[in-house]
Image (cartoon, rainbow, N blue to C red; front, top):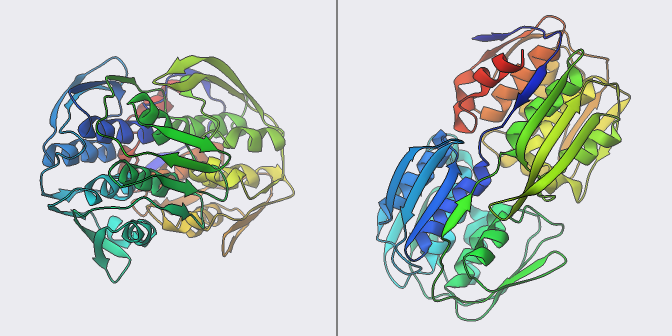
Length: 427
């Protein structure tokens, strides 16, 4: 158990770890490309190391060294049609599990099996398997929807996909398959999800067309990515944004954060709740807008989160639930059933954490309700092996009256290995 005592205030500045989503995509597209790609500021975490191991398993040359912000990774690609057959251990990396099969499915021959830890084996993959099969892919999974996932290279035909739920991972998988298909492939979402894959594919030379919530990709003969500079991860910065909002006389500056509007949905939600949060744009990093975020302590009011806001803040919604405990009134998060298919059922996990620490939260089928009580008492929680639940418990402890003990805090290393070190700096 790791104890997080109440914090009188958080002060200072830090650069959050490199963006996890962009790191995954950079490694995969580099492996698909021609020549060598240099990725500056690659996230050094369990999940992203799984992706480096995966691309190495299919034949990419991978060399890593310590850099100023994360790792410096050099990846020699095998080309669009060059991956060798392999058994791939994705560890706990759901992004890897759902994106990589798009590339493998379009190979003319070969077989790949993707498997992972116990958490991964509970995460459904039918949302990529079904649309891939509609393109002609040969994809098999356990009990029709669970890993291991077996992919046999096949000839693909481009088609139009209408996703029932906005998902950047599903969209990315289908766009990679579209590079290898005959004819154009179009993915239409009910609302926009994060667009890191589209930005990086365009930078690598892929021909894409975007209109509203639809993106169309043409077949390609090659990709060349060259260099990628990974900005700071907004999802990691979000823990300190909310911590500063809740804890005493706090002011925290997060430097070099990814400010892509498809990722920063937490900011308008917090602003609507009355939070003193400000984004300061500062140019681009790796083709992504980046800058600083400054967060200060202040009173909060309740809000409703739904619809198009959800995919822009999907990983931060548990933090919205935490902030709601300190707000005046009842906060509702709906249209967020996707949370049940993360590393854990994050609807159940969020409600469980908040109630265990003295909050008043209730599960909905597609979200949760939190009744503002002015704060949290504190207590003990179990992360269940979910990195974001572990860090949620830690931030809740800082803002509570009595502090919190978190069992399984080591799970934070999946996305934020230096979490406790950065916390000590802000304290």
